[in-house]
Amino acid sequence: MSDKETRTAPSPPIRVVPVEDQSFWDAIDADNFMLARCTCGAYYARSQACLQCGAGAQALTWVPASGRGTVRTFIVFDKPYHPYFKERTPYVVAVVALEEGPEITTNIIDTDVTNVEIGMPVRVVIGTRGVHKIPQASARV
Amino acid sequence: MKYTIAGLGVTPQGVIPGTSAEKLAWDAIELALSDAGLKRSQVNGYIYQPGFGERTSGMAASRASLGTNSTLQVDSSGASGIFTLITAIGMIASGTADYVMCLHATNARSQAVTVGEGEKNQNAIFGLFSPGAQAALMAQGYMHRYGTSSADLAEIAVALRSNAVPRSDAYMFKRPITVDDHQNSPFIVRPLHLLDYCLVTDGAIAFIVTTAERARDLKTTPVGLLGFGTCHEVGQGYTRGSNTILGPSTLDVEPARSRAFGTAGLSIADIDVFQFYDAFTIMTALQVEAYGLCAPGEAADWVRGGNLRWDSKRPCNTSGTLHSWAYVQGFTHIAEGIRQLRGEGGPTQVPDARTALITNVGITGAGLAQSAAILGVE
Image (tube, rainbow over the protein chains, first blue to last red):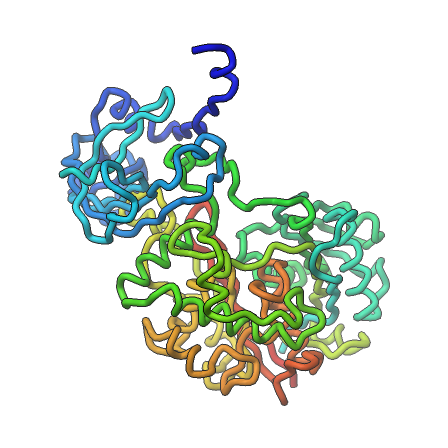
């Protein structure tokens, strides 16, 4: 890459990793999608106290997840709110309801933005954003 | 009626270049002091909500030489206005203050702020930025659930605008819009168009809270703080362990609704004028449904039938509020509620308004915050 390209290519936003969720992101970096399962059977996409049985976060264990889910709601960004996305609009941000119960905020990929619908099945894949890996939802199930 | 608002200061609103948020704050403080006929040294509590654009601080209180025992910041995003009133009552009830100045000031318009731009949070890596995007997630779910169209939501924007058109103090004075105008306005975050969004303007609003007993010695008509309720389900959106704050297509207003009416000893049928938080059209739709003014999913038809107007059977958002009057977050709705109850609503005054329901909604880092207040005059 020339110096000029280095200067003009905007970096993606910072990937904010709360220390409580380091395990989730370590797994993503190793191409694994995990969820936190409580001893009572409830699942979460982050570290937290259990809303179902009231156990503290220590009752949760990170386990491999199916990655199967459906689109609960979604939006299309035409306007970039960050320089990195300027050349990447339009793109979809969705709330995906996973088979195990939790919802995640992610992108819908592998389809045109006009094809995305509420209720459509998706599959979590590990995508990249700059130097970072992130979980995304592919329309190719 | 134990506590009251006994002073109101509203600066000009709109595009006010060459000023600062602190200066606007100071102006509103001076107006509120003058409205109440109160000595600056008597005001011994100061609460402010920081805004978009330049952040305000305690400096305006210092420049206004208030006699503050305490200066504090309250921030629950759009829900903050009512929270400053609740906090003021707590200060007075605890004996730490007698007269509390509540304030919000913003110069986001002149600072050319794009709300949400470059946010550094957990959503940023996915390209999810701005409160408007969170509202758009709710709107998409709502539209899917009820078969509502964007042109349906446009009815809300048109009605809110129509309330501001007669008001010379409104930013959108004499500037009506149509459903076509809404549909032709650009998408910001699909499915929301520009005209689904509220304004961003410069301006400030201040209130003085005190006891009903002390208010008797002041020169304004005191407006009673009859009841409050709040709702902040921090698990909302996160409920299923999500990293998103919203998404559902319904809005649960309990316990904000039941506590506000319960503490006031009133029911919705007793309310003469409503000021619903209107940062986005979808938020207004969800609230008029959740508070029972119309059935779930029927907000657009209800508005199309002539409601949400200042002169409708149940008058709402009588100044055009955030969509068309000015963006002073939750203070906007409280100020208009005070004006209606004092008979100062000008061309959109609701005859004999004695009670008002005010709602504020905040899209916060931990879910949707709601606050509700019932104000009244004797």
